[in-house]
Structures are given as structure tokens and as C-alpha cells.
Amino acid sequence: MGFFYYIRKYFKMSKRQRKSELKSTLWFMPFWYIVGAVGLSAFTFYLDYIVDVSLYLPAAIGFSGQTLQVLLSALVGGVLTLSAFTINSLLVALTTFSGQFSSKMLVNFVSDRATQHVLGIFNGSFIYVLLNFLYVTHEEEEYIVATPALSILTAITAAVTFIYFINHTTTWMQVHNISYNMNSKSKSVQASLEKELKPYHLEKSVEKAELPTEADGKIIEANQPGYFQVADFSRLIKQAKRDNSLIRFDVRIGEFVVAGTPVVTYWENEEKVDPARYLKSIEIGIKQTEIQDLEYGLIKLAEVAIKALGHNDPLTVTNTIHQIADLLKSIGQSSNFSPYLFDQEQELRIILNQKDFRYYLHKGFASIREYANQNSAVMTELLTMVALLSKTMDQSVHKDLWEFARQTILGFDNYSLYENDCLYILEQLSVLAKNTGNQKDYLFLLEYMLERVSSKSASKVPSSL
Image (cartoon, rainbow, N blue to C red):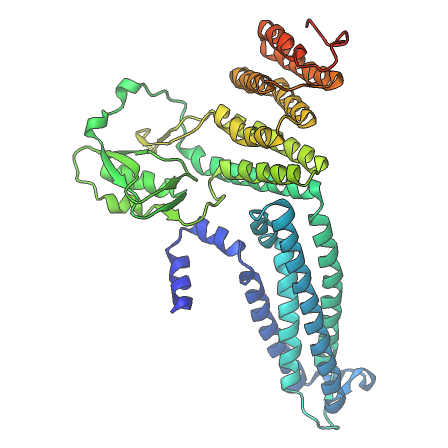
């Protein structure tokens, strides 16, 4: 019953969600390697027992049936031992990731193509050698070439793969690779979402007065609790076009809802609309996914930094803050997209529920700021990245960047700082103020910080810009 339940579950998913779910499992890639191993074993049997390639090759490279059985029995045990060591290494890696960094990173490591290919190679190698062992006889006069040659080659491949997997795991676990891979994953999600929505974005302004009134809208409620995981925008736009309706999302992708929460509001014109058709294009599940959720990538990176703060690991904190800043820059360049999606006739069909850059900035840095507990080194690094963003991003987000820095500085209430710590913080704040045009506000924050310097000698602190 459970097996058929999962099969039905995968078929009910959208193509994009099904691909993401299958990539995050450990069985999908090994399954295809096992299928390939069965096919290769059948081909090997064909070469040795149907074509009999031994007739065309030197006798010195062949094996008798009895000798080959001894060889294959040793190879089966060897490949199985390597597989056990690989699984053990995998479990150690997963335990380390979960305890030291974040349990959310397990999906990233499991869905990594190198990890899945390694498991596939070991499972396929074991099945291949085992099948070859089954059809070999004890006859001395039997002369076999393809089976031993390919079996030995398979065992060598498994041994080399084991070395590669150990190297891959140790490399993947390094801090800079962990944060970089998570950042790259989030950027790929962003690029995929932008590519999906690009055909429906138009350089066309929509006035609030042109939109229908709230009173005329009809609400579609969530039929189960969970996270709003994914929406098939293309399918929704096509359905809205057929119904001649307008759809507005009342929740964001990644947001948690309970049963009865208003998820979508729609306005129908002439034809009667069946709400069930819209619900089929919306997926609500028990876990938060990164398929279309940009915020989830920031949360995962922030969690790594928070865990590192608890383990007194400043290098991990600093590296993760750098990757968050890079991801924020990428998100900031796309968060200004219009929330309006149009069909091919340039008719408005969908209104998205979007958050601005200020929201993502808060999600990325605010939790780190909170758990840092006034750690001046972490605060300096946060302000350094905010100042860096002010140099590279559009002026439309400068107000948000300055406001975040201002709130961070005001958080030093009733807290004493060393003089040099105050100096480094104010240096970055000075750069940010100059880039965002908040020199006057900087002077107020300067006086505020000087009051918190434990050594009142502050001659080196910049008093002007």
C-alpha cells in the first residue's frame, strides 16, 4: 500500500516538483544504475555464451568456469565491503552536517549529483558482479573471456569511485564549499523562476484604480495545513485566460497556511469559474521546499551562521555572511519585478504576492544579528557587507540598507565597546552613509557609539565624512 501511495504521489506532482523531489532522494539514481547493470550483465552473457568471443581471442586471457567462480566470489565480497564503507562515510557526513551546520543541508548533500552517482556505481557494480556469478558453471572445459574482463574492470571502477567519494565528501564539507553550494543552489532557483515568469512580464503599468474591487472577488481557501510549495504559473494563466478571470495570490510561496486560510482571490467576468481547477495548479505540502522559494535559501544560510555562532566558529560565520550578501544582491536585482503577469493578449491574469528587498535583507541578516548578541566582530562584518551592497546596488535599496545599519547600531544600547571595535564599526558606517547620502544621520550615530566606548580616548574615531 505504501509503495503505490508514493507512486501516485509522484504522478500527482507537477513536472518541476517531481524532478526536484526525485533529485532529493537516494534511490532514483542507483535504480537506473541497477537497470544498467542488469542490461550489461545480459550483454556479457550474450558475448560469452551466445557469440562465444573466446573463439576469437588468445587463450591466455580466458578463465575456466571454476576459476572464474572463485574470482567472482571474491569480487562480490570486495565490492560489497566498499559499498558498506561508502554508506558508513555517507552516514558520518550526514550526521556531521546535521549537528554542526544545519539539518536543512542534508537535502543539498543527498541531491548532489556526485553523491548520487557514487551510490549508483556501487549498487550497479554489486548487482552486475552478482548476476555474473549466478550463471557461471563449475566446468573446467568452459572458457570465458568477457565476464572476467568486465567484472575486474567493474571492481576497479568501484575502488576508484570509493577514493573519489572520500575526496568529494571531505571537499564538500569545507566551509567555503558548503556556503557556496547553498548560494549557487538558491541562485539556480532564482534563475529558473525568472525564466518561468519572464514570458508573462510586460513593460506595462497597472493602476490601482484599474483593478477590480475586493467585494467582487471570490476566495479560494487552503484545504489542508502546510507550506505553499509551488504554483504552476503557466497553467494558471492558461486557465485564467479560458475563464476570462483575474487571479491574485494572497500568500507567498514558502508561507505556512492552515486549513481555511485564504490562498487565492479570483474575479470572474461572464463565465462561471470552477475553483478546483486553480487548486490543481497549487501545491501545499508538509515541508518547505526551495523549488520556487527564494526566502528559503536565505534562511538556510542564516541557520548555518547561527549554528557557527553557537560553536564559536568565526570563519564559518564570516564566510556565510559573505554568501548571504552575494545572494541578497542577486535577489535585489530581481525583487523589483512587477507582480503582474499577463497572457499573450496582454491581459492581466495573475497578481503575485511579492516582498521587497527590505524584507529579504531582514531575513538574511537580522537573525544573525540577533544571535550574535552584540558580538562586535560579527556586527562589523554585517555592516561591511551592507556597505558593500550600497556600492553595487541600485539607489532604490539604499534607504533599506541604511535603515538596517541604523537599527543595528541602535541595538548597542547599554553595551560597552572597545575603542578599536568602535573604530572599525564606524569606518564601515561612514562608507555606508556616504554611499546612501545619510551623512547627517551618521553624525548622530557617531555620538551614540562614542558614548559606548569603554576607553574615552577616541581620537582616531572618524568624526566627519
